Amino acid sequence: MSDHKIIADYHTHTNYSHGKGSPRENVLAAIDRGLETVAVSEHGPGHFTFGVRGKKLSRFNAEMLSLRREFSGRINVLLGLELNVTGFGRSDCPEDRGAYDVIILGYHKSVAPFNRHAIGIWGESLLGIKNDPHRNAEGILAAAEACRADIISHPNLYVKVDIPYMARCCRELGIMLEVNSSRVTLSDDEIRLIKDSGCSLVIGSDAHTPERVGDFRLASEAVTRADAWDAVKNAVRTGG
Image (cartoon, rainbow, N blue to C red):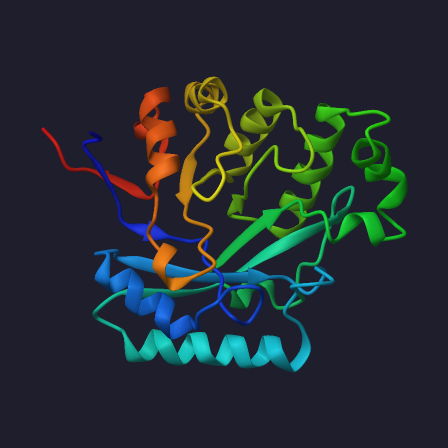
């Protein structure tokens, strides 16, 4: 049993993209689970299937700001986006990046393979012809630095990355690496290595239903096995 409690969930989705519940339901679920902070971080506009863009993005932003006012004093409600890597050093970062409290950046399959600027960079890895984890990490990190990302989501998902190199760079850039509790994409050894490098970790539920908001079980078990709780920035110690 861990002697730590996770107090914030920065990675949740709703029916604005491919989730099943509303932002309000996610906020209420977070309150029920005793969280102090919750963000809804919908997919950026570059995701062809789930991306939130245009008037829909404006409605999402307005609803989140309304929820922030409504629940002030009960829970911190944050406006977030999970941006998509669209090529080497590229993402779908909005011009009003500063309007968002949390910027997550992740590599997703439904973006780069169909982006003419990305084909030459990512195509080899995706087709299995050549997998260069270091080059993949460089491309994602360049995009993260350009958009001033707070978190890189589910590293190693879909494309393998050079975790030691990514951890060192993220430490220097002040970017957290996520241990994703929907699907843990890091091995115990990699989580331990990230902690030992001085890079910060964050645990996210990646919830796609209100019922999964604040569900950190899988990630918590992995962090416990790796003895890496001291690196998790959205957790507080509860034991002696």
